[in-house]
Length: 588
Image 1 (cartoon, rainbow, N blue to C red):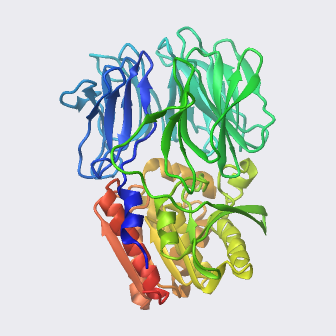
Image 2: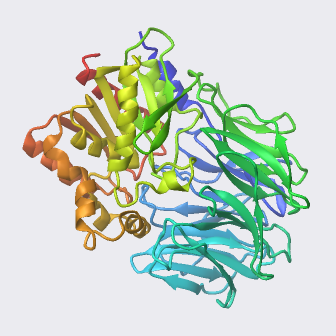
Image 3: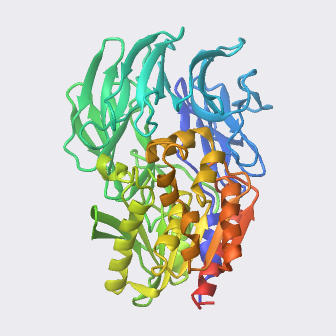
């Protein structure tokens, strides 16, 4: 007998994000929380322990943070999750929100950097292309940069004299370049490693007069880092003897880096002393670090969880930093690692088994989105819900995922979707042959890119899957390209090697709509009416074709964008997904 309240409690339990703080007033912090039942932005004054809710909108607010001075909180105001809007600001201590930059029309956000003086650098994306604006207090915004190709704000130096812009003027938004400019728009320096090798700004040194910038690169086939001084024209590559991939952030005095090390679905933290590149491991439990930052006193705060243990905000001082009200979420089961030989190399998969019973289990293949993302050993309420209902859950870090090197991530280019599904099928076949999964009760599911792979999978591998549940998917790739936000169009051109007009056959081969006649599995589609990433028209095209063919299907529509920030809505969606799967597997 399933405890219905147990799985719902994992969604309803109050949670908080890792607090971010003002550089010049580190006692002034902001964080996200779902304590009201909807994710919103909050302030926290560490000196008084006063907490205040900043935003209150029907569909929630995700983007926001305090400026370096600690005077204002900025938050992004879109319409019902459509991601198109303007930046607002409100005094840290309370008051009415107002447009942060009067004169800037609504757009898709493309980076934001703020200085202690009140100067802001705002990146915007519209149908006309990408722009970066200098926004000085009390003055009209000035256009600092514009280009038709994808671009974003990558940083503002602490003395507010240099701006870093990530761009894809070379035509490949998946492997971007960096340019540092002065406030008059003149170029200081460019950094690009050539085709297929991106560089990404990770922030200027947080010390006035220090022009060094932390940069992520992939010169040796994986994510690593270097310190670049665009003024002096020097580079200091950080070479670490660690497997997997590394990223970093500055310590407040710029003498060291806080290094994040990701390997096989788990994370570690290190302190790298820039004087001699010595590396010291920071003691953290086995699991996943959802974010970390070094405080001015030298302590490190980080968000941690594992598949079995819910998230907690910890400090290297030993303290729990920020505790949400109410009971914690119920625990779940630990995850197991599996390696399966696939057509492109060894595939890493994560398996969650029910605590009771023995296989073969009805099994859910929960496919992650992105595709530039990965599944890991973190706490996921939806995975735990499936397990509570007697399902094994398998998550596959297919080619296209991050965390396994540049070649693995980029292997899907030119053959989109079909490559990932080869890996998913290899793990599917292992799960059946090993006795884990019941071949007659296999659910293929995922959201966003995972929803795309779900619909493509049931069309190209119709005999391998029993039920499909696709959330906010790409269903008709040509129509999706026509309607999606401009940044994603650039992403798709890089992924496919051109637009649908330039390489129509590639889009046809990778579109779920192409294979809809072959679909056998009952399919549930969840769709956001205001989704700018996987727009509703292309989903309607797919659903209409299913209806014409008389294929069993259902649709769950909701009034938000690419997912929901409302807890009860997420519970309704999860319940609908499990009920649909159980019904069509004969488990109801």
